[in-house]
Image (cartoon, rainbow, N blue to C red; front, side, top):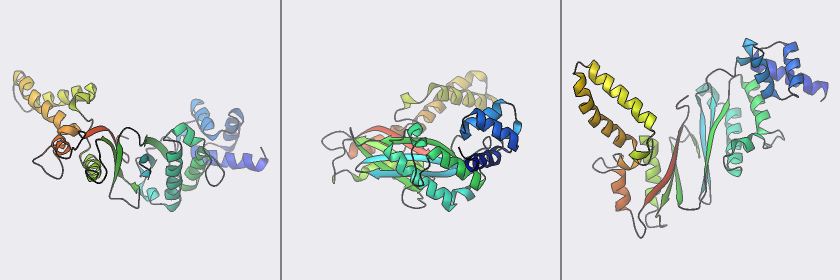
Length: 288
């Protein structure tokens, strides 16, 4: 490595961590000039400033979807502020990542090692972008839907431009017959974006989520002044409503409050009953 490359790496590491020149050089020497490993090295050494940017919360950013021949990929890239999410350098980086994400079928390890248009690999360009913009930026999650065993649909809520937004939903349906009931797929994706189901069926909702909700419900009932023996009885009805409200098939259809999603699927079924095989919903920053 040339002196110039070494100095450039030291500069990047200093900007990312706030650590002095000497410690950054030592870390890079120890970690074969790998920036990410050098950050870890400095943190393990107990140099507090090493987490300066990397420990901050990145809960803004963008979600991007790409669709080709029925295959769909989605990726979420986070920044600390919405201001950066509107930065053109950040947007261009995200767009190129979306293209790569489609090619590597949402395998983030492969994505990180893929060369970008400027000849550098993704993880190095990410470090450069963080250094340039001055905020923590993370590639949070990605998913890929292939075109086999069903038909895929996606919906971008309030798209900033084609395929880019803050909420994206994808759904795979069985039983779609093109030009006959094809339009229902996009409507189901739209419903998912709006209603945020936890699972397809209520039986599939995580038990830990259900137990936590039940605990909260019982505490609310007791705190409202009702006797503890009533809490069990009342909580059964409330948890049943929670399960229905959060399972896709039992949710009230957003376009007709008199029907459930399961009713809509039956109404639009043809030769093969319409069935939801899987879905994904990304809301930027949710859960961070």
